[in-house]
Amino acid sequence: MKRLTLVLLIIKGAIVCAARYKRPNILMIYADDLGWNDVDWHDETLRTPHLRRLAFDRHTVQLDQAYVNQLCSPTRSALMTGHYPHHIGTQKLRDLGYNTYLVGKWHLGYCKYDFLPSRRGFEKFRGYYADKAGYFNHSRDLWKGGLVARGLDFFTETWNTSSVPNWSREGQYSAEVFADESIQLLRDQPKNHPFFLYLAFQSVHAPLEVPEEYVRRCDYIERWDRRIYCGMLNALDEAIGRVVKALRDLDLYENTIIIFSSDNGGQTMAGGNNFPLRGNKDTLWEGGTRTNSFVHSPRFIKRAAVRQQLFHVVDWFSTVLAMAGQNISKYGR
Ligand SMILES: *[C@@H]1O[C@H](CO)[C@@H](O)[C@H](O)[C@H]1NC(C)=O
Ligand SMILES: *[C@@H]1O[C@H](CO)[C@@H](O)[C@H](O)[C@H]1NC(C)=O
Ligand SMILES: *[C@@H]1O[C@H](CO)[C@@H](O)[C@H](O)[C@H]1NC(C)=O
Ligand SMILES: *[C@@H]1O[C@H](CO)[C@@H](O)[C@H](O)[C@H]1NC(C)=O
Image 1 (tube, rainbow, N blue to C red):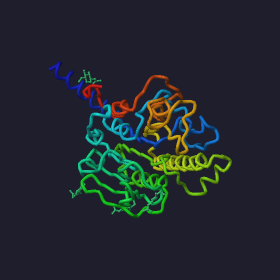
Image 2 (image 1 turned 90 degrees about the vertical axis):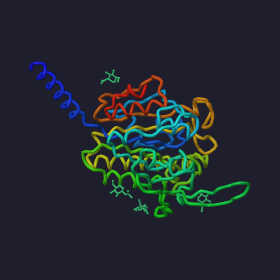
Image 3 (image 1 turned 135 degrees about the vertical axis):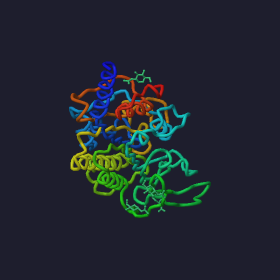
């Protein structure tokens, strides 16, 4: 009898403990082709005030040695699966009861429905499937010798519906579109239910396109490609600022862990810069593989820090699952 009471007490204790761990929301923000020297705390001629404020906040840990693969898709597949790029898998957070959203770039296959985000663990998707598109027309050209096709690459998916092409954003700048879509999803997000939002911006990948007002803010930069790039980066920064403000307005900020990173280094032939690191996107030098990354969490991080330990994109998978309260030893990592 005594033993039974003890067992019951232990079970009750475990349930209370489990209930007390209110699972955090996770907002993972990815920039595309953002170089090491492409934030204003490395190159002070640039304009990324919202990112800087987050990166140097007392609730932020910067990952100084965070590495990725040198190209988009291998990094993004590793991010989704926790495996090196030659493995594939599906995303686990939905199974854990998270509302899972993807806004922006997929780039992990689209030749079969089974490869689409909503079949890979994302309940809702708004964005594009391929590597690049126009920032305003959300359209891409297909070249085989000559131009063979032009087509929209902007789709809406809900987990149990097929993908639907969506022309409603034509003419609107991609960073703004993805901020708007994210804010809408956050507004619709059921209260007291955790979410995972993977916000994979198109910025600052080529082509160099941004509304003129952003370029004007960078008019002191002489090199034309760097000037436009600076404008694109500033548009990205503002979009991130708006999403963070929405978290605050919706009372979601305290319990949201914000992760920031990029998929690979900067493309020096399209405005990016990785100084003082050698190489660029598409190379295995540090310039292609080391990213500006940080984790910001008002709830879990109480003191600013810069961590020197090696971190790789495959580590996010188990890191995020641990944040979601999972015992990750069963994943063998
Ligand atoms: C869309 O914009 C891109 C980049 O400016 C351009 O290369 C492409 O031709 C445009 N597509 C259409 C259909 O206008
Ligand atoms: C899709 O899922 C929603 C919510 O679970 C459900 O109400 C709806 O009937 C489903 N639609 C289809 C086509 O299965
Ligand atoms: C297209 O996107 C807009 C903006 O997010 C949304 O309101 C609309 O429902 C979408 N259309 C379809 C057919 O999914
Ligand atoms: C996690 O799981 C492993 C193996 O299944 C187990 O040995 C360990 O005690 C668990 N840890 C916690 C904190 O539950």
